[in-house]
Amino acid sequence: MATTQSFSKAALRQFTGTTTWYRHGLIRDVLFTEGAQHVAEAAGAFWLLDEIAFAQHYERPVAAESFQHWELQVNPDHTALLTCDDGNGRVVFSKSIPYSDFPLDEISLYFTNHVILLPSEY
Image (cartoon, rainbow, N blue to C red; front, side, top):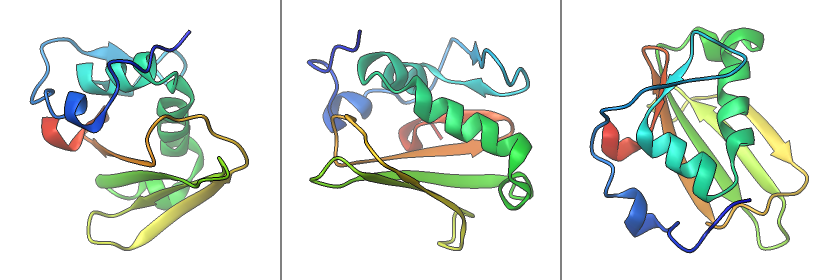
């Protein structure tokens, strides 16, 4: 069960590097940092890491980008939009999420060198 008490934009800024690497359970060549692990655990958002990891194998435009900026935008009606761009604003993937209980209105993650990380960890 997710605990959102310690989950905030301010709490995410504390992650500035990682000493522990986590391996995705299904897409074994994808790793993620302590900050991304915190997002998954504290916000109940393992599904978000799954979306990023799966896209590396099943979405060719995504896999073609060596640096990816992922953004989740949550609407007041709890629908959401997940997008991936090339770091320069050119969107290469987007997916509508019919329902999300993600506790923030938005979050950004990066994917590079087979690693999912928070922008503050880059």
